[in-house]
Figure 1 (cartoon, rainbow over the protein chains, first blue to last red):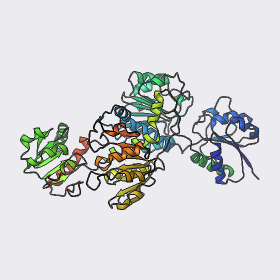
Figure 2: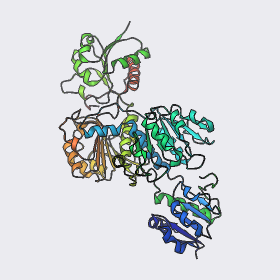
Figure 3: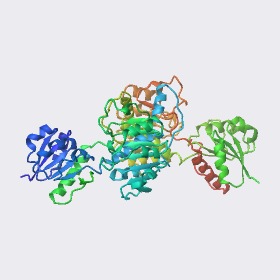
Figure 4: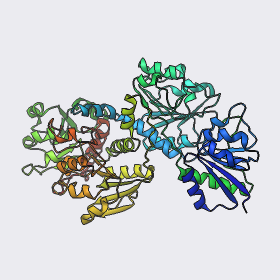
Length: 314
Length: 314
């Protein structure tokens, strides 16, 4: 007999179902749906939910027995509206995106140093472009936010012999960060950086933290990379900094509105690369492991991992 | 009084001169030239030479007192013709290119996984391209040649959680290589690779080692990266493999003839990226360190580092 009934609500429901079934978890009955409409009919007596926040938001008010939600994303903004319920445990996906984000960020940092796009365009003209390459070695990277993802980025930056600066609320736990900055030291943090990477979650405190003032504190040679949440960036200020050459480049994976609307200024902003929120996908084989780990803790009455603080927003 | 007279013969003669002067080496007189023509007038009584192999080749027959040549490149082919003299110590640049090559190779591997060029082209059409990314993690890289550069590449590959395979004449010294192959096991080495990277020097033994047979042993998803010497690659066979889709892509820094001639088939070969011999420049601040180190050994009568074996060719 099953003690717990899990609503599995995901675009990738079948793959998650296969992976969860393969784990043979005790006492667990599954209700599988790939859309909120599909879920509604059978969800009423589910006490657990696993899936994407945008889908879960739609069924959240209809789950009277709800005790725990494990989401497949890092970002939980869809579940944090002012009227959203908070009478359950919410855990997000962490620890699985660091490697993916590291591959993403360093793909674009190396692209920039190696002038790959310029060489690609030269090649279209059958032109031998031996312009000397830049190097990452010795350059300075600044991480806005140093959690589990930031720690992996810092480690990769050290592998490439860069200097690493971190801006956090107060934590200083990552050994690969050479110097930490907090609070009012934001502009001092930006000074002299070759690369600024935003890893911040979307919360009221981080809203438009990357604004004209911060961008103005960066050297003109700097490149900004945005892989946290789009709301962190004042998009008009960024477009202006790029248009006027105050900033050498930007690489954006996240935006205030996604998909980026067809009329958005970023489509015609120079030296800006758009990667359409592909930096760190939630691969089911990674994320299922988190659910399984937490389900075992849940059965034992232990504290769950990666619990979201509703007040803090991450 | 100077015991030794150094011919500094380099395109970057002034920068090398500044760096060598700053080191304050004992007993050393400098003759500085940025072309063979400039060098000829004063070179006759130089016993040491430091510079680029293509320039040194031109003055080599006119140096009766020659004892030692330190070149600024890894490749020494210009000094190894059948009629070239061999009555001196030849040392090349090693140990300084690993980091640069690692940045280069992983720039292009990550470019491929992240589909950056496809996303860049989508962006030109104002199109949100959320095609799922590939990842390096778990992929297989094969290194053709595992010397000091290969060891750094292997280490970076392990940082990105790849499997690493090495093909060498016999050496098995790098701890980051998961499995070694030698001699006749070349096709077994190629089996199942996602990436094949040639780091081989240009010698009679390595001539066209990357041919139709080796390329045919790679999976169709594989990408070939060429950063050793161009003569290692059968260019017609490579163009054919790319044209027919037998191979997913190639990234070429070196060629049989450089600059690549305007009529070369590679300019119109699909899925091929050309980086115009920019992968690992000889930065004077790196290479001068090697000269200084070896000059001190030379003064003490010790064995020099990075000595080239004229028979072996590297």
